[in-house]
Image (cartoon, rainbow, N blue to C red; front, top):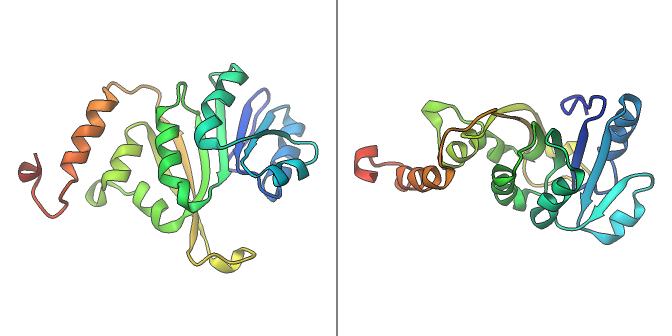
Length: 192
């Protein structure tokens, strides 16, 4: 909730509110400061149980763009405890949104968080694809024992602050980095 830092008149979009562990404290903070919280939940039973929450029932991977179109705001934030199996797909969706969120706070698998926040000497395809449009910071990690039931992997929270301007043709850029990282053990010259 502190990482999202809702402010007056902001729109916060929560992905996968589940039973409301993050959603209810975030809703309370939003109500105090005059921000609006909208959540997207795929599970109809969980969506019905969220009391006092503005819920869009649907798949964030498919419905996020229409939710953003519906709010009519260019300034919004995204937050979510993301099912680990959709992280890559969600990062692609976020990168293609127009307008992109001002900031995004996600809890994801720690290994993926480390890859997406990698710096130049440890850069990889995922980091290059995401860091072209956002600055990524791994803020803190969580152990499996922090959850009930405990997952089989460690988790981490990342904060992604969207860059103001991108002067690249992203389609060409993504094609380029795919070639660049095709065989990580080869030299850049050989990959190209």
